[in-house]
Amino acid sequence: MIVDTKRLDIQPLDGRALPAAAAFLDRRRPRPDRESSLRQLQWLLIDNPLASAASDHGLCIRDASGAIAGLLVSFPSAFRAGDRRLLGLGSGGYFVEPAARTLGFHLFKRHLRCPGFDFFFSTSCNAASGALWKTLGARAVPESDAEYVRPLDLGIVLSSFLAGRISSAVATGAVRVLGRCATRVLRSVVRTSARVISEPCRDWEKLAELARRHRPGDWITADRSAAFLKWRYGPGSPNHASDIRVFRDTRGHEGWFSLGETVRGDQTPIRGRVLLDATWPRERMGFDAVLTAVARFAERDADAIYFRPRPGVDYSDCRPWIMRRRREPPAVFAVAAKGRAPLEVSALDMVSADGDGGLPDDE
Image (cartoon, rainbow, N blue to C red):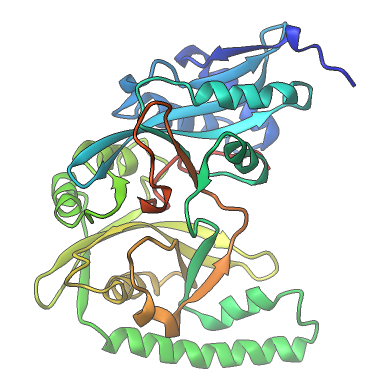
């Protein structure tokens, strides 16, 4: 089949086109609330405190009638590398209709020519978009194809992991019983381990100051300014319902974490909490203390905690209580902008809160 690409045109995506872009995404992955895609796009692209750093909100492919046949949304994000401020252009919501597939590569290539940015990245890649990133010179962020699971109810977690592998109801029941026993041990360890307390906090200035104070100088990480945090978690954000808590140990060392909700598993659903972000004094507090604070808060209404590996973080003290899972393909890709300094992709410290906030990507 030969596609007449002359009838298709790549155009900038401006604010007036967001309703059409949302409808395009909804046709691909329908949602119960038809307005949710539009609200999410408006939050990500219009409400973004750095929106003025980009001339448009991405690119789209339109056919001869003006209908959208392909889409790639983009949004500016600020990062810190030591004392340097870097401006990245994130992307998501990539999808191209079959009739416009031949222009998908050119859509990506044009995106990577957007001026004024130090690098380009995406945190929601799948096999199709990841292959395009690779073709255009990007690299996957190490370990972005993995996640850790900290079970809170081992009976539920093991039953879900083994669903479909164990056909015997007796064996499944035995797994649940053993899991409940192990859960009691896990919870006793949480209660008797490092004394860390936490409390809710939405003081954006305080959270931003803690993030600035504890920002690791060896890595490239999001600039967690008060304006950014208010946008990321405040009214109008898809993450507004997230729990944000400041924690401290007996020596007075403070940090904070944010938790979102998720449901994993098919036959046996797992009520999960996703560690969206966390900042703490890494030289004086191990990640095991952070995970203890998270577990103490989450165990009341969750079966497991999910979190991504981060560069420079030692997980050895957590090993007895966490499981590592592969989640292929890599979700995070990045590449330096043409004419800018090379990007050390392995130095990118990306967390679940970074990027497009869960916009659908090409399957």
